[in-house]
Image (cartoon, rainbow, N blue to C red; front, side):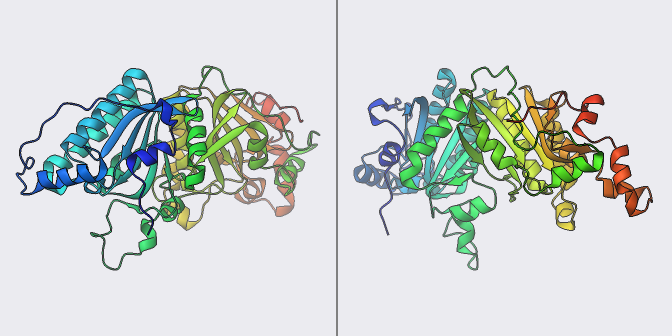
Length: 447
């Protein structure tokens, strides 16, 4: 087993060491052997100090990650398992307060076993303290990024880790609220790994150590690069055919054509660099919804893009998470609409499709940052409208938007199947029809 990096080695992996300045240690004194008078606690602390060279389980300071100045919190696991006690809470509170005073992002490099048993409930209360500091920092519009090291369990995961805006994890790291010694005997060990947490939508990426500096640097730029946030992101140019559809059914068939450019092509063409957020933080992911932050024309733009598949509840919840994050940070949002509709199978209903769509409608309706939408393919009913910007939606020539798919409209109206094409015309779903109806602002040119 390889030795775990120390707190300062973890810092060196992401920050320019020449710029790192440790924050002053808050004044605070503990009673002999701590609040519980736990016999041998002072001796254990003394041994931890001698072993690590640190006086607590966290090192806090400021430094530059690339060109971005940030407040950094790094855990020393060799100091009593990186556990949180009262003096740990003092340091974390001071670090968050400094971040708000200086308007700096917070980057946490976490490796902890949870709350410190030798301080009992006084240690556990630090979780409320940390949660409050995190909430105040979020309310101040400052980003929080967590790098989850091995292991990250207990309250450290449930506050600094899972509570961050963006969560990165090192390969193979143990992650979970339950530590390895308190899990059920028959628990699947894989469920507590970084890879499993990524698959379940609880972390945004698993990043190799040799890529960590560059990845954290990009995230730092993106999370703090909202220059000109009051201006809406321009809609992308169309990437498909430029000819106007001659009929409603022609619009439908062109939007459904397998060779038509999809969201990935649009996102790739629009952004010079980007990073993805993954998952709804409720145990679900949807590969048919791409979300993240990217750089366009020198500033950060958030994006949520449907990939042409029925959108699942986790996709809607991930998009809502992305939009609320962008709203807090003052980042404009671009959405790309392309779905035949919301997933309507039994699993989607059990997963709360209606509630997830409602939540996305609410996030879009209440966003204070400008929203831009481009319809790039199918616009299938409310499942597509939920991702559409009110009063700032555009369309490509090879797209359509409809209250319902023509085939379903035909069935509901009890018409024979051979009337589907005529029904498509009646629905007035072509891009030009959408402009005339005031549904979209215009049709974008094709590159």
